[in-house]
Image (cartoon, rainbow, N blue to C red; front, side):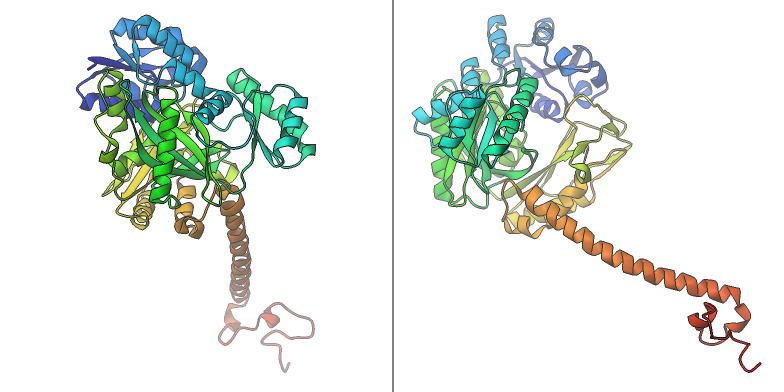
Length: 507
């Protein structure tokens, strides 16, 4: 086992890995940018080194600086978390060259599964069902148009090196194709330095379901069941749960076998995730493989009792998996809400700033993976995640009830957060019934919210009119206090023509 591990990341995921290391008796090394000097992960690590200015490309993405800290500190291994260098095959190559163990899959697995088209080709050869589409990168407009016509509209344009919802465009009709292609290529070039795309058939009303897998260098692979990740904004997940309400035991077994076949195709080592789209007939299709620890791994840990990070570390140290497939049992239900410093009312625009106060929920079945504290300044340079709030229950209804209770007492001041959004989702009848897909937020949730706001607006107008009537009555009485001994006539006090005021009658 390793004596010392460097965590090449920041925020809540760095804190999560640091905790696992400390429980295993492994010394820890942290890295931080100048803006993260007072960050929680910087404080929690036993050693911490500054690796540059705030922009990620000058710090967390700088391979030379990360390797230099590993060598200086004597770290034997590096855990990359997720994001930044986690799926970078050049980083994996460099670690191998330097004799430092990267806690993750091989550079070959990263390259194969990191290219969406190569991944499709590889898993197809292993007998894994994929969404109909092209299996080679496409760079010219003519090729894209020809492929889209062959596949049939609607189609999705996807960046070959994509991830995190970047370089994606839905095209329903041919006239939209050229402009969508320009935007997808431009976004892909900016995000991944690669503007190639591929074309995929768009599946209407899909569910996004993924399978967590673990593998070791001895050829052992297991899956830990599924996670439902259909609640998304801008193609990025915001709420996840396990198990999925639509997955039957037979479907789980079939998807698990397919995920393991995909992992074996690249001799996968460590934790990884196979993502699938599920259509309305419950047919599933391989979407992509994430060659890293997933943001939403806590829901799987809560229902299986398996510490995925510790398994990653043991496997990287050369040990066999500590579990067999028959050992994996799903107990109860878990839901995760990603709490971001964002404004849901303004299309989830990031809202960085200083957290002035923080009260984190607790109680039975509640877990909060966080990387912030009261007084911490959320930087503008990185993903504005505050925490991942997870609730477990003996069934889905109890998990939802516990999440409602936890969200109701979750206090974050100083910045806008997505907590109010999550509260409303937990109360939404479609979510409670498990009746949703990847378009839930835009096509169901916000439309119902707009209708609710319009109804509330009508009530508010009526209330305002009544209040104005009451105020006018008070003003009338104050103008003639001596004459207000009986019922007050607003017609008289309004001095309507032809109607004498009180005291003038009979004169």
